Every structure is written in structure tokens, then in C-alpha cells.
Image (cartoon, rainbow, N blue to C red; front, side, top):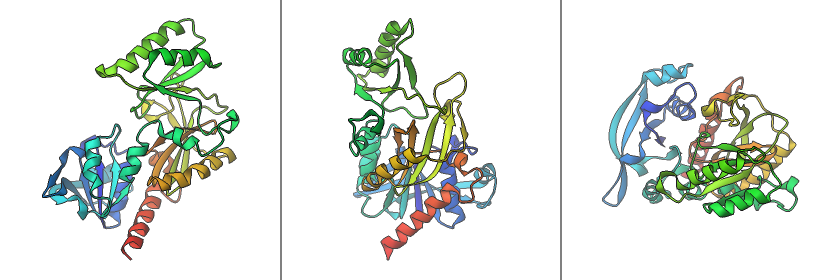
Length: 336
């Protein structure tokens, strides 16, 4: 098979923890032709989408150490039509470039995308979990799929929401952040809360000279520290871990200093995955990272969900192997 990865630049890959690198190595080790595609190097030529691809070859495709594999790779540039690919993984970091999605729209009939272009458009924002919440009863707080969530760029309204809710703590975050960037804990009981709220809302709404939407979310208190990352493949959970924040931070993201421990989904978490899974598949979202806290859905990560390395520890079946098995079966079925 010809497998493409729309992704960040090879030089910025961090071999120790990079989930995309695990997918690339698994693809190369199986004998597939692998190409890296940088979003800014696509072009339309004679009504077809082309890209200046970097073909990956490795002298150590089965290296046990991922750094050894990374250093063994050579990249050869080749300008080829995008529809030469049987499969394209979309592994670029948010926010998405809508022009790139427009380029790839024309390819969906020929190429299997993980995840689908329409699915990326629908889910590449932090409002998507709210659409999934409609799959379940929202009247009973204990049965809600997601925490109480408000999305707005109206400062006056957001202040009213903060004052009206009988909650002391909220999470405030930008619409297009990732890796925990820009996520802060707002404590209403703090003596300086009134001044902090004004300052923070001004900063987030006006950041970059734009009128930005921001997310205000109920802070979920949990017995166990941190959140749970669930890797979903074709609507089913295939790997989990709990991310624990450092002592001086509320964010669990590894990029923000958190660390990971093993986790087994409890009954509530399994039920949530079972409810959400079919909708993800319906939307063309085959490889997804769910973030859960207190049995509720916090975020849906569809661009470049990570956590493979941490989940893979002490597991016989690696995440990347499960993903490539699924891809090969899908293409075999498509071509039969």
C-alpha cells in the first residue's frame, strides 16, 4: 500500500513520545511505501491535488528503539499526485488549515482518510463533545455525558454564567488549543477572583487582535487525580491510560508536565465509550483520543491523538499494530 501522513515537519518529531512516528515505523516495517506530506506543500495541478512528498526509507525498520529507527530514516523528495495514496493519515496539530481540507475534499472517493475530511471539519473544535451529549439524557446531572459547558465571546454573558452557577471552580480554555496550552483553572472563591475574571476574559477574547470564542467548563472533582485518555479505533476503545498532573499544575497533559499511569475503564467510562463509539464511526472518525474525567467527556481529539507510547508500555499488542491491522483490512475490503 501507499500510505501518506499529513503532518508536522520531520525535524520536529520527538522520537521518545511521538505517536505518529510509531505509525510510520509500523507502516514501513510492513513493507508499505510511506510518504510524509507537509500541509504547506500541496498544490493543484491540472485539476488534481499534488504534493511534494518525502518518501521514508529505513535501514532499521524493525528497530526496537524508536530513536534508532528515526535516525536510520532517509527522506527522498518526490512530487506525486495525492490520489496515488491508498490511505492518508491526518496527523497535523490543530488548528486545522481549512485550505488543506479543501484540497483534500477532492480525494475522498479515491483515498481512505483517517480521519475523514468531513469528520475533521465537524469535530476539530471543542464544541463537538456538546453534539455528542445529545445522544444521552441531559436533565439528570449525574447522567450528563459532558460537564456543564458554555461557549461564547461575549464577556458580559460569560461573567453572568460564572456568577450564576453554584460552582466555585471552572476551566477556561481557548477553542483551538492543544496539549493543554492555554487551559487554566478559575477559582471563584479566591479573593482576587473578580479581578482575575475580568483580566482573563479580556486576554482570551482579544488574543491576537481577534474576537475569539472561549470555553467555560465546569471543573470536575475526581477521587483519582488527573484525566483518562482513551484511544478509540473504529468506535471501540483499544487502549487507556490515566494522566496525572504535577503537584504545581492542574493540567494532566504530558506536554504540560503530567505523567501517565495504567488505567482500566470502569463501568461508567465503558458505557460512555459504547454510547459515543457508533457516532464517531458515522462521522468518519476512526482514530480518536477521548479525554474523560469523573466519567464525563472533556475533549475529543481527532487530528493527531497521542498517548500510544505510554499506553503501549507492558502491553503485548501495540496500538500502532491494531491501527495498521484495521487499515489493511479496510483497504483489502475496499479493493475486493
